[in-house]
Image (cartoon, rainbow, N blue to C red):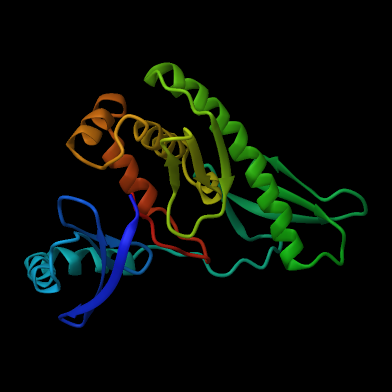
Length: 244
């Protein structure tokens, strides 16, 4: 389903982004990290009708925006010993160890040991950590996809991990391909599983309608709690909107 047009309106000093799509119902959402308000609107609904819908939800919108303002956030990472980094929902302290030879990360107890040469830049250190994150997320995702292929009776023809600015995951129904956001590796494993199942259920139902929600309820009864956990977890310095 492709977005056809974008527009902006302002209601009570709140900027609203309107995405007009070929859909049946209007949906109002407030998204992390900064409480951006976005409306997915059917093509035939004009701005005034959207404005009225926003006004009817102003109290809820303000409450959501306030909760995002209070959400914990990390400062910019400098890749130095003693910094906090997250892996599968747990906090680890970075331990930078200088040596010649191969750059690598070794997880040991409550630490992530980063082995690098002494003159390695912050950007290169971050790259070493990101590559380790990618490798570890591949391991976990592979196991979860195999598990849920058996449960759901669908096959994922291909999947990959990439940096995404707007979603935790996405899928292509025609090619049976799934994309997973690399940042998922920092979240609890149940959040990774939730996103994978979410995308696989889209193979049955493209839209976030009652049928989709019923399927989610059947296979992951606590999915709404997990979604909340995912979208309330500590935000990294590089932030983006999340759509789930």
